Length: 65
Image (tube, rainbow, N blue to C red):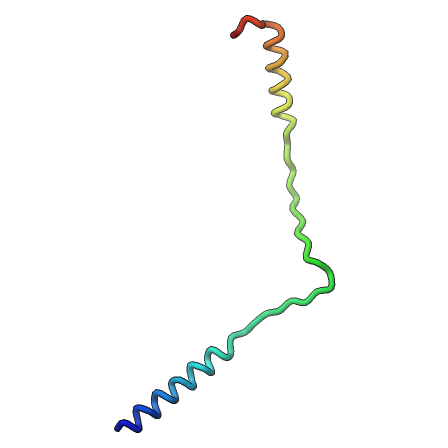
C-alpha cells in the first residue's frame, strides 16, 4: 500500500513539474528603441484669455477690492 502512494505522489510531482516547465514566454527583439507617440493637444489659450479679461476688468474699475 505504501508503495502505491509513493508512486502516485511521484507521478503527481513529475506531472506538476512538466506542467510548470511548459509555460510560454514571448520575447520581442528589435534593433530600434520602442517609441510611444502620444497625440496630446493641450489648450491653454482659454486661461490666458480669462486672465487678460480679468486684468482689463481690474484696470477699468480699480475700486472692486
